[in-house]
Image (cartoon, rainbow, N blue to C red):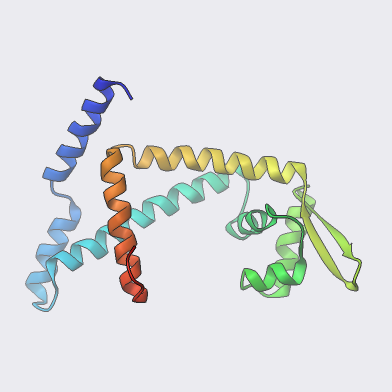
Length: 180
C-alpha cells in the first residue's frame, strides 16, 4: 500500500471511530428503558450482530452469483479433501440422508459432483467433486474473499489484528477456554 492510500485508510478509520452509528441511538434508548442493560455490552452485541448480517448478505450474494445454495457450498467444501461417503457427508453436515440425496442430485445434475459405488458396501455411495465443481468452488472463494476484503477495507492492518485478538478473547470467554 502506498503512503497516500495508507493515509486515506488511517483517515477513514479515524472518522469511523469518532462518528456515531445507529447502534448508539439504540443503546441510549435500551439503557433508558431497562436499567439492567450494560451499554457497552449492548453496543458490542448489536454491532457484532450487524457485522454478521453484512458478511452473511455478501456470502448469499456470492452464492447466488455462482449458482450454489448454502448446503451445496458446504458439500463442495467438505469434498475438497477428497471423496467422502454419502452417509458420512450427511452426518458431518448434520442433515438427513434425504436432504443429502436432494442436494447431491442437484450438484450431480449441474456436473459439480459424481457419485461412485462404494467398493466395500454395495448399497453405499462415494461422492467426489468434479473439475467443474472445483472450478465453481474456486470461483466462489475468489469472489467472496475479494468481497470480504472490500467490507473490511476501511480498517487498518493493525485494526484488523486488534479486532481478531478481541474476537478471539470474546469467543474463548463463551467456552471458558484460556485465551492464547
